[in-house]
Image (tube, rainbow over all chains, first blue to last red; front, side, top):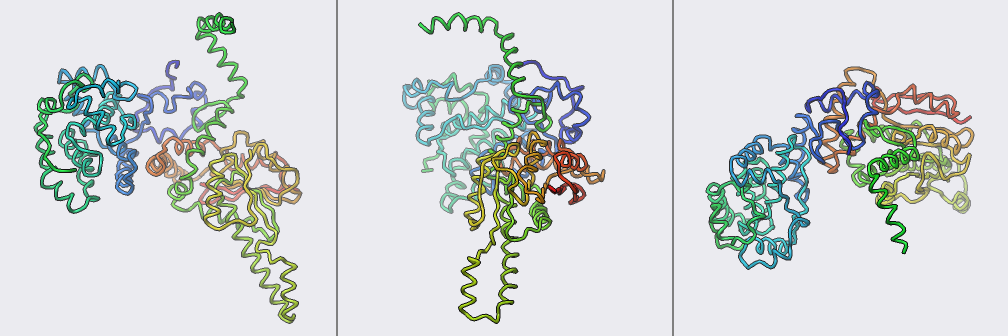
Length: 269
Length: 312
C-alpha cells in the first residue's frame, strides 16, 4: 500500500456526512485518491467507517431496536456496543494502561483466533486447566473464536483494539464463569460483564436479555445467578488485565481465585 | 525440469519486486480502461462494473425492504406513475432493463390485465344479443387471454437480483407473459426493432457507459417505440436539497447497516446519485442516441425524474 492521499486538509468526522455532499468541487483532487481509502485520510484502521455524532446516535437506536427484534443479529449487538461505548471504552483502556499485565496486552495486541491458537496443545493440557477447559467449552457449545465481529464505528484505533479484546475474551468469561452459550448462560455473563466493563451494551443486554426466558429460569436467574454474577463482577479485578494466552496451563480454579471470581452456584444452567 | 527453468525468472521477478509490480499495475490499468467513478472514488471502468455487481449481489435479498425503508414506501408511487405514464395497451411488448426484482414488470402486468378486463367487458356488452353457443365460440377465438398478448421481458446483469425477482413472481402468482433474461444494458442480447417500450427504473445510474446503454435502447426499440427512464435526479430547491443531502448521507447508510448489515453498499448508493447527470444533461444524452421528442417530468421537486423519448 502506498502512502495515504492528501485531500487538502483533514476534516473532523463530525462533518463527514455533510462534506461528502460536494463532490463536484473535489473532482480536481479526486484523482489522487486511492481506491482502497474510501473515507480519505481518516480511516484509522482496516474496516473503520468514520461516522458523525448523528449517525452514531441513529446507529445506536437502530441497532438496539433491531437486536431486540431479531436476536440472531449479533452484528447489531456489536454495533450497539461500539456506538455507545464512548465513555466505558476509554475507562477500560486506562485501567489496562495502569496495570502491568494490561499494559503489556495493549503493547503486544494479542489476538485470540483459531489461527493463533495451538488447539492440539491446548487439548493436551490437564483437565481443569484454562486451556483444556476453554477448548472443551468451544467444542461443547460448537462455537469458534473467529466469529467475533471486527470493530467498525470506534473512532480511535487503540479503543478499537480494546473492544476487539473484550469480544475475544468473552468466550473465556464463559469458561471462567462456567456458563454455557444458551440464553440463560449468556445473560449471566452479560451481568458479570456489565459490572466489570460498564459498557452500555452489556447493561442493556443484561436488562433485556431475560425477557425471553421462562419463569423457572427467571427465578434461578434472579435468586442465585445474578447476585453471584454481580458479587463476582465487583470483587474481581479487571478481566481485560489478564494475559490469558500466557496462562493456559493455570488451573481454572486458581485463576478464578486470582482474579476474584467466586465459585459458580451449583445450579443447572 | 520445468520448475528449474521457471526458477530464474521467478527470482528475477521477485528481485525487481516493486518496479515490476508497478509496471504490471499500469499495464493492467490501461487494459482495464479509462477512469470513471464509483460513488466518490475514482476507479477504472472494469473495477466499477465489478464493484457494482458486488453491491447488488450483496443487497439483492434485502433490496425491496431497503427501498421501502429508505423512501418510506414512496418508491412505489414513483413506479406507479411511470407505468401510468407508459399507459400500455394490451398487446404491448415491454423490455424492462435492470428490472431485477420485477417491480416495473409486475405493475405492467397488472395494468394491462385491468385494461384487458375493461376491453373484454366492452366486447361482452356488444355481444349481448348473441346466442350462448356463439358467445362460447368467441371465447375460443380470443383464447380468453388475460393479458391479450402483452409481454414483458425483464433483463438484468445480476444473477442474484433476477433470482429474487423470479422468487417474488412465483410468490405473487405472476407467470404468464413474463420472461427473465440475464443481460447487459450496454450490450443487449436482443435483435433490432423488437420492443414497443423500453424502461429502465433506478438502473441507468449503475450503468458504466450510459451512452452505450442509450444506443442499445434505441436499437432494440421498434420504430414508434418509447424510451422511459425513472431515476434519481437533481433537486434544484436549495432548502430541500440540504434536507435531502442530510437525510441521504446521515440516515441512509445507517438504515443499510441496521436493516441489511451493509453500510458500504448504501453509502455507494447515495454517492452515485450525486454523481449522476442532472435532468438537462441526461435529456441531451438521450437526444444524442437518436431519440426524438425527449422530455422529462420531475417528481418530488427533482428527487426523481422520468425521462421519455421516442424512436421515430
